[in-house]
Length: 105
Image (tube, rainbow, N blue to C red; front, side, top):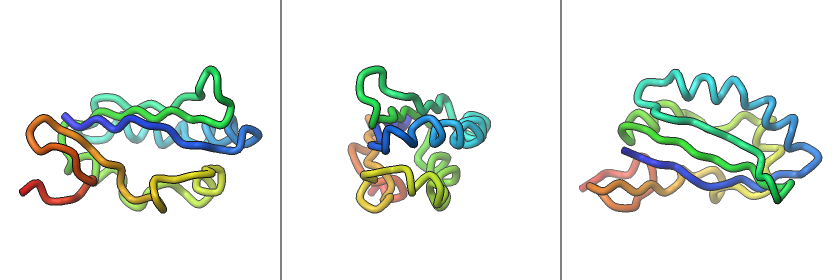
């Protein structure tokens, strides 16, 4: 199982519209092959924070779903990204921490 957990920092004035624009992405994620859970949620304390949580059966399923990453509209609302939208680091019990898409040698 692959777990992606973290947060994005966004403009607080843009957070609600950014979340509303992500509803389709959440639905698509949950319907994607290998997706066990997919959630984006506003932080209860910090208005600049969007919490991200995903569970996938395999890295391949996650990589297929991610494709090219967020849309231009979504990127414009994100203040800090995962180093220019590189895939996040994943950790699994069998392969250890690595970037999504890296070989598991």
